[in-house]
Each structure stands twice: as C-alpha cells, then as structure tokens.
Image 1 (cartoon, helix red, strand yellow):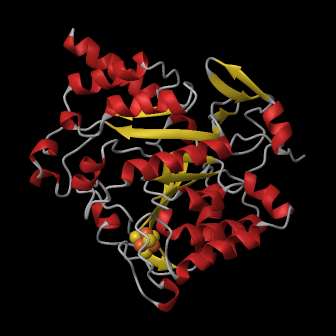
Image 2 (cartoon, rainbow, N blue to C red):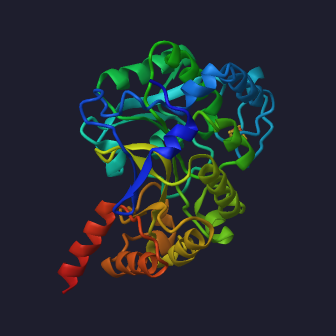
Image 3 (cartoon, rainbow, N blue to C red):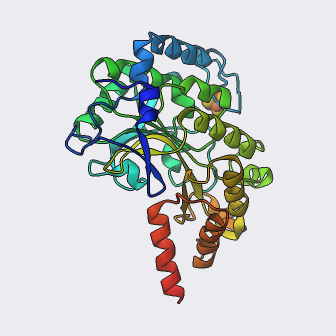
Length: 352
Ligand code: SF4
C-alpha cells in the first residue's frame, strides 16, 4: 500500500530525539523499509511529473548553470566548464559503503555511486584522483539506472549519489528509468554543498535524504582552500541547505534506525579553526530545528595539496575536535552523529 506525504507525516513519532516511522518492521523488505513506505519519486511519477522534471534538468546542459559557478558551458554541444564534465555521466565506483553515518548504513550498507569530476575541488580533497583528475568510466543513463538496481539487489538501504551536482540531470534520468524496473530505495543526495537553491528545487519530490557538507563559514577561507576560490560558498551552501530542509525536514528513520527521509548535515573540523565550526553550529541553531542531524567530523587528513598551505598542513588535535563538540552541545544541537560523540568520549578519556 502506498503512502501519501500527508499520511507519511502523520505516522511520525518522536523517540529519543529522533523522528521514527512507526509500524515498519525489520522483516518487511530486504532493505528493512516497510512495504507501506515508498520513495518520493514514485509519487511524482504517479502524478506524471517525473519525466518533465528530467527534461527540465537536461535543459541545463544547453548553457550550464547547474552550480553557482554558472560557467554557461554548452555541454550539450560538447563544451566543458570548470568541473570538466560532459553530458555523459562518468562513474568511478558503485558499492555498498559501511563508513557512512549509521542511519544510512544499517546491515546492508549505503549504496554509494561515486561520480568523477567536481564543481568545487578543494585543495584538501581526499578523492582528488576522482574529483580533480576525473578518473572513472563514462556510461549512459540507462547503465547508471542498472547500477542503482544492482545496489538494491545487493541489499543496500539507499542510493547514495556522491558529488552529484554537475551530473544531476543524469541522476534524475537514471532514477526515472530505474523506477520503471522496480527501484524503491530512497535517493541520498551527498553533496559538497556548492549548490544553487533554485536547482535544488528541481529535486523536490525526488530526493528523500539530503546529505550536504557545510565546509566553510567564511568566504575568504572558502576562496583560499577550494581551488579557484568560490567566495560565495558559505552563502550558496546555506541557502541550498535551507531549501533542502524545506523539502524533507528533519531526519526520519524506521524502527531499525534506517534513514527514510530528511536532512543530515556534515561539517569537517579543520586545523586552526579554518572551517569556522563555532559559526557553523551557531548558524544551524539559529536557522534550523535544534534536532537537525549534524555530523561533526574528525577525519581531516592532509591530502592532495593541503601540505602547501601552512594552516591546514596538519591533522586536527584532540582539543580542536572536543571544542567543536562542546560548541555544538552548548548551541543546543541535540541530534549529533553517534559515532562522532563516541569519538569525543574516547578523546576525553585519553586526555583524562
Ligand atoms: S556544473 Fe560544471 S559546467 Fe556547470 S556551472 Fe558548475 S562547474 Fe560549470
């Protein structure tokens, strides 16, 4: 039985600070989602609006303004812009991933698809051979749809599209094709955050889970550490996140704790307070509900060209991570990532 958005919202309860979809039992489906739950895009398809949305997105390739760089590249005529992507999607890998946030991972893993190229390209990028150099294999949208179906067959709980901004039209097209062949997993839009809110509106009713980074709060820092510096990163990312929240609200999980819908924000703590973590938690507390899922991440590594920049050419210290968690708690954020909190406890014990 299908469930409308209104019915879906009615079934929400609140347990331990996290919204839970009542009545979903573990044995319902291989992925753990209730048979009565359905991803947003099935509703859009029933309304006959999904194909039109794919066409709208594809028109962006005529003069690309998919991200705030607005290169205007005529990708449909073979031109490439800053990101280096054409109209043909390039994929590096597709696999169940167990290192993502617990609500995405469950038992079967998060079904990640890593796209080549990136519209941001930070100097500290951990995936630089894929994002900067474009390593990967060009495929058609129909094959991308098959990768999604393959991840579903392998027991993943969601389709986690990693670095999706510059290939968003291909993703929508693939979802449309895969839906016709039985895709019923939520789409998780896993973005670096350099987005245009008006393009995020095209995803309304298609994406169920948003997983954006909010990397920098200061425009000078973002210009310094994201290659050919977009000074508008903080503003663009914040506007996009507000639009994401408008669409999907706070995180909703089923009774196994698996994410079904909602916003999950990531923020990587950087050395010397470069990321502006204090400002980040204050912004979340001011603009979003305090129980917004927030992952304050400790795994900063000196990758790619970070060693050329003195302030970010080292790992973070325990103190830097702990002050970040303290700031988040003091700001009243009540739904912090479980593993980050466990790591903070470990650091505290170690420091005595
Ligand atoms: S997606 Fe790529 S081509 Fe399009 S505006 Fe952004 S950087 Fe330019």
